[in-house]
Length: 154
Image (cartoon, rainbow, N blue to C red):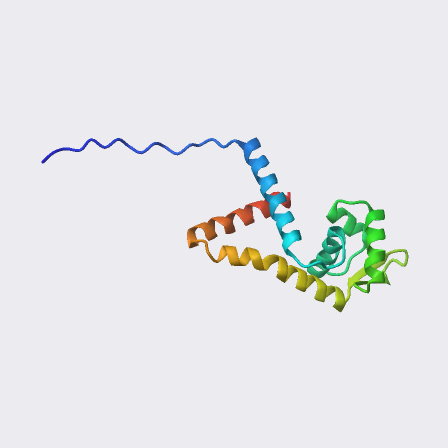
């Protein structure tokens, strides 16, 4: 019987080009956001206004100051955008129960409808694409989402 000389498989690399990975992730996230905006419906509000509405939908009633911190924009920017959302009847303001100087923002049923419609439209293309990926890649993506969320929560 002839012997076969098999060389061992190369060891996997244990180094990662972190700056290169950061660059690639930033570009990818930008492409995904642009694709979502381009493929989603025209909902008649700005990306910041949509983000404010979506945050109110996810996290519940809050103040402009909390929204400004969460969105990393000025309280004035939130105030101006909330005024527009209020004119469109997508949010409403009420006085704070414990502090009369504060105003609490609530999303209205029209605001909820808009967020749900926009979210469904924006996610449908991604869900369709994910349906074509094998289970191992889906599990890898699920793990990556968990890691990215942890990174953002730091």
